[in-house]
Length: 555
Image (cartoon, rainbow, N blue to C red; front, side, top):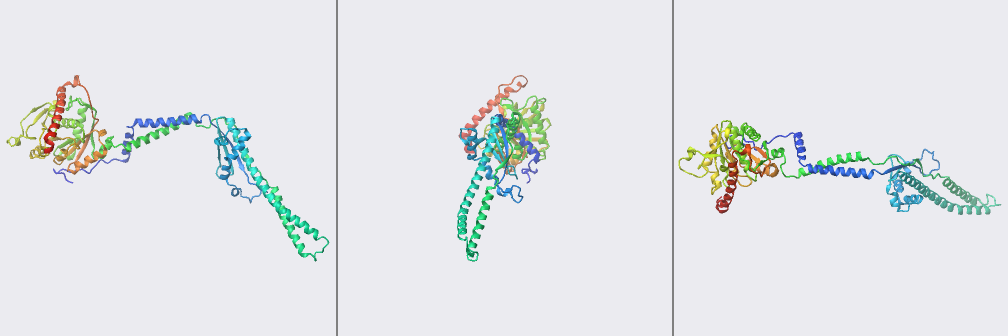
C-alpha cells in the first residue's frame, strides 16, 4: 500500500520477536504480580509445614510373608504357584474386617476393627508371592506389635479356611466310601463257599466295588496328607527407630518448591485473563509498532514544556524519541506527525507534542504545532506564547476562522522557539478539520526545514484524529498501558490503518498524580503552568456547555 503523500506505508508491519524474547517478556510480566506469587509460596510452605507436622510422629513397621498353596509334594516342580494363587484376592483378604477382628481379639483391642486396620497397608511386590504388611502408628512398638498380630491373624485365618475346605472334602469322600464298603462286605459274605464259575457276575461286581473303594481311599489319604501351611514369615516387624515422615527441612523445601510453581501458575492464569497491556511487548504487539520511549510518572501541576532542558532526564527522553522519529523513513521526508491518546486525558499527549516540538527546534527546524482540539482548547494558556503574524495565505481577508485566525510563537528557552496554531471552539468541528485552510497548514511541512505536529483529542472519544490521519506521515500514540486493554490498542491500530494512516510508534507513560506547587529550581514558569491548568479546566467546562447547547448538534 502506498501512503497518500507518496511515502511507504507499514500499517501491516510489526516488530518481529524471537521466542526467547517473548518468554523473557512474559516472565517479566509474571513478576508484576508479586502478591499472587507470594500467596502461592505461602500456601506451599503451609502445606509443607502440615506435612512435616502430620508425619513427624508416625512410625511404620513392616513384615513380609511368602504365601504357599496346599500341596502334597512341595518339591514338585510341575506345580505353578503363580497360576493357583491370586495375589490381589489375598491382599484384599489381608485387609478385610475378618482379619482385623481376629488380630484385635488377640491384642485385646476393644474398639472398632475398622479403626484397628486403618493404619494397615498391604502391598505385593511385582512378580512375587510376597505380601508386605506395613502398619503406621504414633508408637513404634505398637506399630510392630500390630503388624505382627495382623500377619499372624491372616495366616491363621488362611490356614483355618484351608483346613475347613480339606475336612469338608474328606467328609464328602467318606460319605461316598461308606456305602460302597458296606455293599462290598455284604457281597463278599454272599460269595463265601461259592465257586467263581457259579458266580462270575457277582465276582465282577465285587472287583468293581473294590476298585472304587481303593480310589476313594487314596483320595482321602491324599487329603489327609495335604500340607496346609499358608505361608512363611520372612521378615518379622520390629519397632522402627526413626519416624516415617520426610522431616521438617525436606517438607518445607518441597512445600516451597511447590509453592513457587503454584505462585507462577496463579500469576500466569492472571496474566492470561488480564486484558490490560502490562508491558512494552504487549503494546508493541497490539499496535504492531515499536515503543519509542517510556515517560516517568509526573504531576498534573507540572508545566507541559519540560524545564531545564539541558540537564533534565525527562528532556533527554523526549530528545531520544525525537531522534528516533527523525530517522524513520516514513516520517523523515515530509515530517508530518499526529499525536493522540487512545482515551482519557490528552494532557500527556499535549506534553509529548510540545516537548517533541522543542526537541525538533533544537536541530534548527521550524516547528509548527496545530492544536486540533476544538472542543476543549487549552494549549495556549499552558505555554509562554505571543502573537505573530499570520501566514500569507490567510492575509487575503477571506476568513478569520480556525485554523487561519491566529498564530503564536512559543519560547522554549535555550531550545529555541516553535509556532503554535491554538485551538478554538467552532460550531462544526468536522468541517474545520477538513477545510482547505487545514490542508494548507499541513502542507507547510513540504518545506524540508519545517515540521508540523498535529495534536488531536483521544481517538476513542472523538473521530477528529481519524479525519486527519491521511494528511500526515504517521501517528504517534501516547498511552498508559495500565489504562488501556490490548484489544483496544488493536482496534486503535485498525481504525488508523483503515483511515489510511500509519502508526509510527508509541510513547508509554505511567499516568499523572495530583501534586502541589513545586518550589525552588522548578519554579520558573510554574505560575503559567498552574494558570494554564485552571484555564484548561475552564475551557473544558465552557466547551462542554457549548457542545451541549449547539456544537454537538451541528457536528
